[in-house]
Length: 159
Image (cartoon, rainbow, N blue to C red):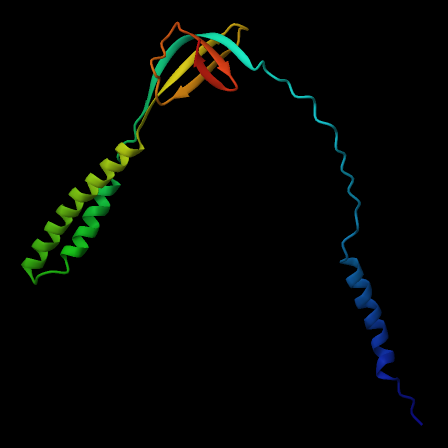
């Protein structure tokens, strides 16, 4: 009589090895402790501060065209112009389309550059407590260098 082993008996060492291998992949549990400390008390500036305008500078930013609009316009115009005519007429339509597209593309880019340009004034103030700050304004409303000003709740006013 021949003794045979049960199939589960042979799989038992394999299952034990698989369990050990998978447990090695487990992520260890870590404990995180967060400590929250009270923020330092805020330092408040006086509600109203007085000073004198040192100087006012006009600041102009100008966006310069790159030429990309001309190039893109010529490319699109040439492709559109190539759709018309046959033979030398097609070549003329392509050239005319490229030229017209270049002109239109250049004009569009010039307009976008002008819209992106900006002009404002930077006002430099020397406060009575010795601190110096600068403020940017799009409109001066008659403010001049040497004039007394006050800073009230973040707004610079005459007086």
